[in-house]
Image 1 (cartoon, rainbow, N blue to C red):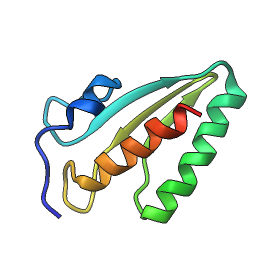
Image 2 (cartoon, rainbow, N blue to C red; image 1 turned 30 degrees about the vertical axis):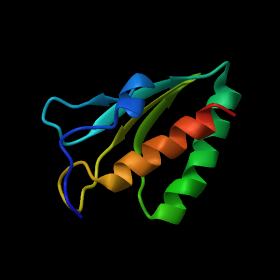
Image 3 (cartoon, rainbow, N blue to C red; image 1 turned 180 degrees about the vertical axis):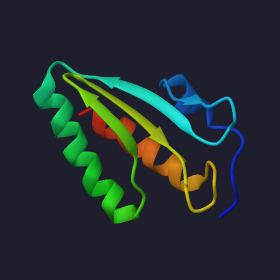
Image 4 (cartoon, one colour; image 1 turned 120 degrees about the vertical axis):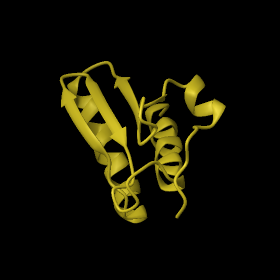
Length: 93
């Protein structure tokens, strides 16, 4: 799988940021409370497991910070873009 050096405009518009080394993308999701943040993480976990592609993330109360990169290739790939899009859709529910 080829590494990418840019992210789609729609992801950038929704708050995803490309790392300075162009190896990953990062976003902070904010929710009403801890329950909503954990619910988001559980729903994402099903998508991630189905895709066999797992985020690096951190949860503190109502905030979920996530970084996506494809470790097997050492950089950003379509797998990261696909999971980012899924995470955005899940966060809108």
